[in-house]
Amino acid sequence: MADLDGSGLDPWTGLPDKFVHLVLDRRDRNGRFPNTITVSRTDPELRTLETRLPPNVMRKKSNGRLQVNLARWQQILDAESIDHGYAPTPLESRFDARVGREPKNLSRDREGFRATVLERIAEGIELGRERSRRSGHLTDDPRLDRLAADWHERHEAGRGTWARLAGEAGMATMTEALAVLVAAFLIAITPRRKLLLLDQLSLMASGNTKTLRPGTSGFRRLAEALMSVTGELPETVRGLPPDSKPVRKHLLLDRFLIADHDHYLEVTVSGDVQLVIDGERFTDIGRLSNLGLASKITYEALRASERITTTANRVLSVENETAFRLLRRRRAGDVIVFTGGQATWAAVELLSRLARDRAGGEPLEFFHTGDLDRSGWLILRSLRARSGLDIRPIWMDAETYDNNLAHSLAMSPSEREQTERLLERWNEPFGRDVLERLVEHGRWIEQEQILALR
Image 1: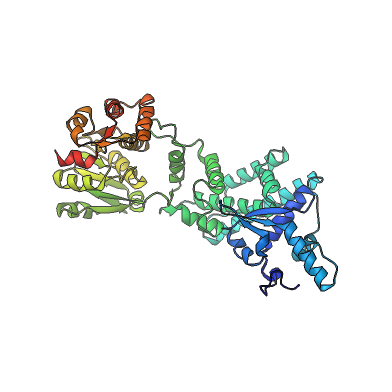
Image 2: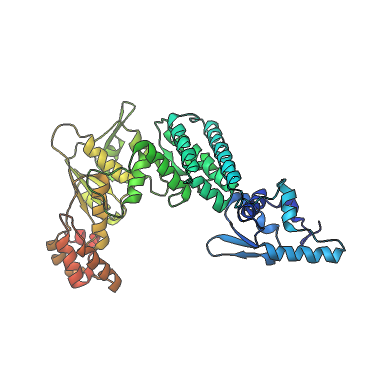
């Protein structure tokens, strides 16, 4: 066939097979060839699609999708055929011939559809096993067998999520999604000593790092599968706030030594902190602290440690970097931990392990200091919930606020309203008096300002 748009390209040479299957799957579901179809522009298998179609049959959408007008493409083909003196060929026939498929109407052939889904489920499971095997992980496990049995049982009962996905997105998409899930599940439950990043897991299971990112359907399916092994999403010692579902999902992945790459995987610390890894004690952090230097500890090193200890009796977490620098000089006998706003998971792990691994002597006391504003209290509340520790505020009381009011900054009207709404539902054992003052005065105070005047 000649080129369709004057580019000199024959679109059938490089037209992605996945696109052809997506169109024909839609046809088979609805019993008719679609007029338009919308696909992902970021899908690696569809990367060449835009170079193979006439420009006036495509429309880029704001959500990273590409809408292809197949009816308009058919009109272009018909006009080209007439110009060259031969009978027009339906685009549908070209697509069928390209991938060797015969037309079906699955909406009229439910039994055939159900049987095909079962075949594709088996295919997806085997494909997932093979990906897990290639990456050096499990290929067989009774927990996967139980999951597979449940998928078949639900499908036979007419409640199968895989059947719904096949009906909505096509058989090829469903098979690939299942293969990713099986591979990710097997890799996740394989016993390991070292931390595995979620991006690495995604790459092994799907060939790219984005498939299992939090918020994606792939991540949700993996979390649900792992929950079937461990039970409900885990809670911490203290009650978690209402918006804590992402926190509980992190704790779920954490059970399998998997870390979300979107969270910073290191913590900056000053003070006498010692790690014991494979029986060897590492004291470099304390030695650097004696020289006035801070250290960074990776989440991987924290998780690899058998014990994390300190000779200090106080641990102070600090919201802002300038305040961290001030405090590590003034309180050299304490462990000072920089949270960087909302605490990283590495910071949470360090605090939790220092408390858990404490043996004998005086119990550790935990304090936190931050800005006197709405975010400062939310950061402390989250840190207490995620660590399960009784971390108390320091220099965050009403007296400190009153003494520093002359150096306060004006809050925006929207921030003042949000603070008032937070105050209405605040049930922590601290902070209410400061929140009341924030609402009353409409002014907040930077942590650095408070420490500079002490």
